[in-house]
Length: 329
Image 1 (cartoon, rainbow, N blue to C red):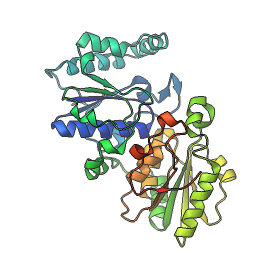
Image 2 (cartoon, rainbow, N blue to C red):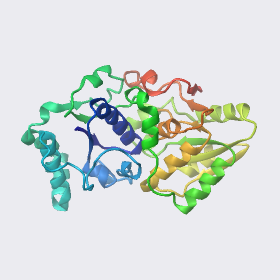
Image 3 (cartoon, one colour):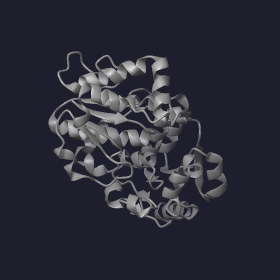
């Protein structure tokens, strides 16, 4: 069994799943998703943001909390005990609150659970910000616990067809999303993703995007498709749709998709992937996955030149697949 700790928003969850899935595939073993409590409840550092665990909306090949098959009874390894301890902590609300309180005080019960179960030596932890591709990842043995974001397509691109097939939605779209999907399929559709939110309000996140994902980048991307395609129809997705309307003038056909909240981000991701072409938002793993899951053999995917504004976090050769078109910022 391979265990991967799942946290953060949907785009990052998908990178974690895909990398762990590739390692489990190499070992011909099962995969278990150890879902962070805040992730399950749609919180970020204790504050509700709505970006909850959503991998369960896809046809993934993994067990996870609340599944009857998760952590099979009698599993011989310490990983089974570790997962069982964490599952019990999550099952009781007062314990979840206590875990969060202790974590805020610097006490990490996840690490304690690993110590108690003897699995701490099996942990492979990617340091925060250390996002370049690591070839030695595939030297990790079975029974490994993974912690990190693994933001490189190189971990799983050899399994691309399989990963894309597994990341189809299990349930039908909402009625509103079905209508939008029909319009997307009936035209020369281009998804355009504008990430605002914490990229504006969080100084650290803002430092990653400044000078990379700019208003001029979007204008250049729009102009590129207006020149490349006879009749492009832009479908704009954003967590601040009014900002996009006010700041990104589009002369031709445009639709603003705003009926899904963050708790249904998986539907927006699906709709973006159904567009014929895609404009990604720099380091945004959400728009990255929409483009990667796009099955159009003639798709054009536009990206920024840099992955990240900070040099030590900038690894575009690992993050962006070959063939994606660079548009200057």
